Length: 293
Image 1 (cartoon, rainbow, N blue to C red):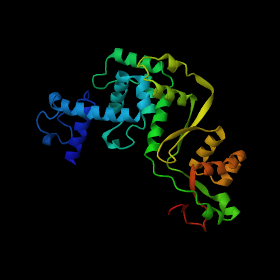
Image 2 (image 1 turned 90 degrees about the vertical axis):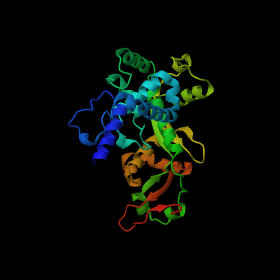
Image 3 (image 1 turned 30 degrees about the vertical axis):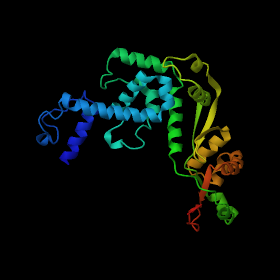
Image 4 (image 1 turned 120 degrees about the vertical axis):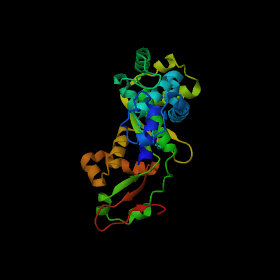
């Protein structure tokens, strides 16, 4: 237990060196080597750990990085690493909260590594205010990552579905394909991504970025990986709303009660491959129907 505490303390000192961890009453202090947390001793580890995590986050949020620029993205990553994610969450979802963090950044105080000067914080706030679409770009980056690494989708089990009675069909819930993710935005995100592919956007506010204005109505986007390549598809609000209801385990009868017009879109979602199975909810039906199972 003491070793685990020592390891956790060492990691915290690497990512949050401003904390005073040399108190004599810190758990396990009697087994910690003298000067174990000396700044010169851990600086090498800090550079490697922070640099590695920053590179990992940059690979996930490539479009966010392009829009924000190298310096500011580095500031963002280092703040995120030290303020948001403890070592216990160092897994594949480590960077999941970065879009939310971007949205909250202007209200945060920055106490992390060398990025602590008031001028740096002011510049960062100004940079984020010049890119109001950045949080949604980051959200899209994240679901692109999720879809790319998702499990392969199944084939809709039509024969099993037809074996059910109308009553059983009305009470089943649908299984969404693992590779689909969706979001809505007031910004034309596909146009922003096209600009990023067609040219290297300036780290400063680029006129071409500013030409992508917020839309009068929200844009509904779905990310899917039907085969190898991840695709971004614009969907209708009805399809978007139906996906949200299915995600909440609404049955066909629930959907009809909630919004009757949405039930007519179920067949379309099956045709697109966005629904790849179903789960009956009646007591006499206990088998989970999915293809290849």
